[in-house]
Amino acid sequence: MSRHDFSLPVKRELAMRAAYFCSNPRCLRLTAGPRSDAERGLGTGHAAHICAAAPAGPRYDPTQSEAERRSGTNGLWLCRECGDMVDKDSSGFTVEQLRAWKYGHEAMIAEVRQQGWSNSIELLRSGRMTPGVAKEIIALIEDRRSFWARFDAEFPDRVRMSLDGLRHDLTRLRRDCAAGSPLDAVIVALTQTIRHFFNEVEQINLTTLRCDGCDPEWLAFEAALRILRKSIGYQVAALADSYSIPLQGEFSAYFRGGQAQIGP
Ligand SMILES: [Zn+2]
Image (cartoon, rainbow, N blue to C red; front, side):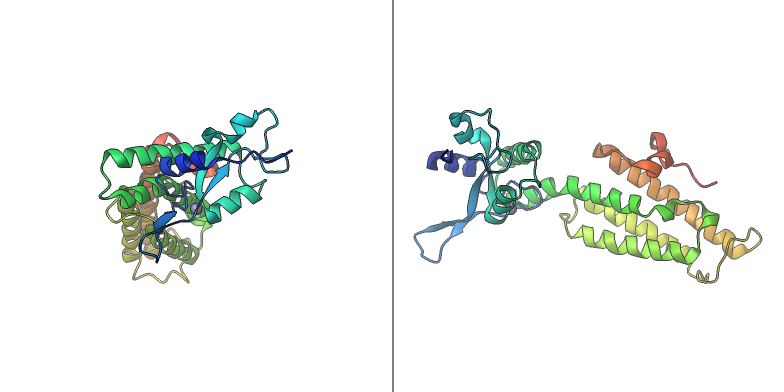
């Protein structure tokens, strides 16, 4: 059986609907531009099949007619690299996921067009990247479970290391946010909360500090950690809420009902 490839007009329509940007929300590479030859343009994009063009291909759907398989509704516009990934790795991507990329991208392009093209790339980047970044911020904090364990089960030095790592990871994520965007502000606020904690415990030797209700240094550390947990808890709960991201496991129990439950 022959491949049911897209015709040139279908490919052109797919490219135009995507405004020549790769539809993978984590990529967004621009797939058209000038050639060194002053009169010619260079296209580096790829019209990928959502359900494969031939039976051996990924996500092949035998119930599709030839016309459905060749139609623009069965395609999405990607850069070469993402196109290879999607066409060659059958286990990696589902039909639903690729449709979500396509519809999400086309909706974004329609929105950007309404707002004019002047800031379009910046808008694209901030709009498309942020749901992913919001999830990553929440996952980072969820991953540090020991950080949310009971105070007396912790070695203060491990808390310090965990927070140092978190601060470092947040700084890295900031590079994916447009400066001054809402998520940029969220990351700055979280980083300031952590800095505030470090200022509070600056005078305490965390390496030797152990749980001791009679030790003023322990009590100061515990008080600073309570404030930190409460503050980060509210910030993460608000972030998860505004992006409709469900909180996981222990973490969700901790912030049940959007209220941070603090300590023992
Ligand atoms: Zn791409």
